[in-house]
Image 1 (cartoon, helix red, strand yellow):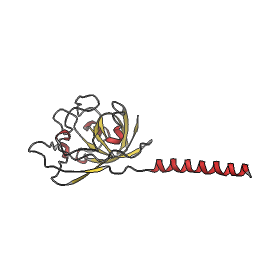
Image 2 (cartoon, helix red, strand yellow):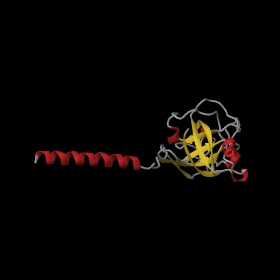
Image 3 (cartoon, one colour):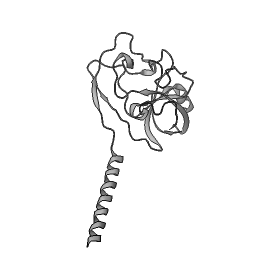
Image 4 (cartoon, one colour):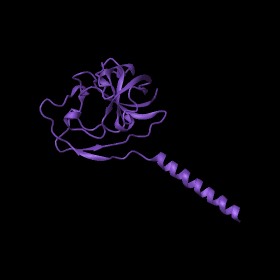
Length: 188
């Protein structure tokens, strides 16, 4: 009787641990807040690559997390210029440098950027039937925006791989279709 009780107790504990683990693994990334848009001062929002500028009074969702990283993490590829004077704003966060549009570099949404843990690491991007390796050099900030530090652009969604022109070219996407593309990425 005592052995049966111990076996049942151990089995229940095991089930609770597995259930908790599966629940944790299945958690999605929920919004962490909102910011109210401010109208950019004249000439303060660079719209190269059709970048959005914050709109006065519009509510923008913020995220401190991104979807869970897997062997093939689903994302949206966007375009950014990491060059001085480009729509990426200041120098890249990882190395405090600007990068040529001809170099395959990316910025990742805040959760994937992971407090600079992915800095200067390569990721492989899969899209348009091709793949390309690119270096992570910056964060696409999902927690803040609509201010001078963010070139008066809205916060980044939580599932963005913001890429240089070199990445788009390597994926063979026609220039007229640059902007947004559903992709997968993985650690290289």
